[in-house]
Length: 58
Image (tube, rainbow, N blue to C red; front, top):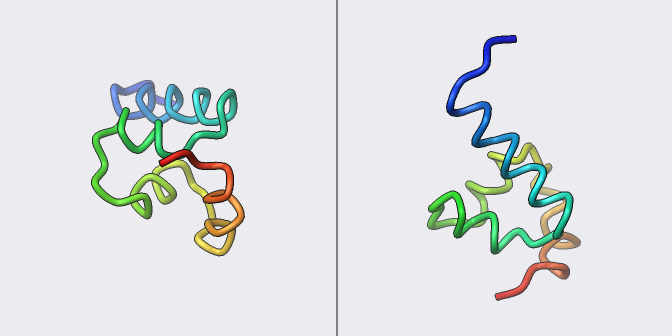
């Protein structure tokens, strides 16, 4: 596997998400304007979004 800036960014976001469970923080960290983009970026299934949103701070 080739290590790129993008793969490091994605890995960092995934580690922080797993540690905190805070999608909103990851959205801000990545500079996303839509939570849907953050979900796609992390590889989270859209069907899981409502359950995950319960654990997300605004």
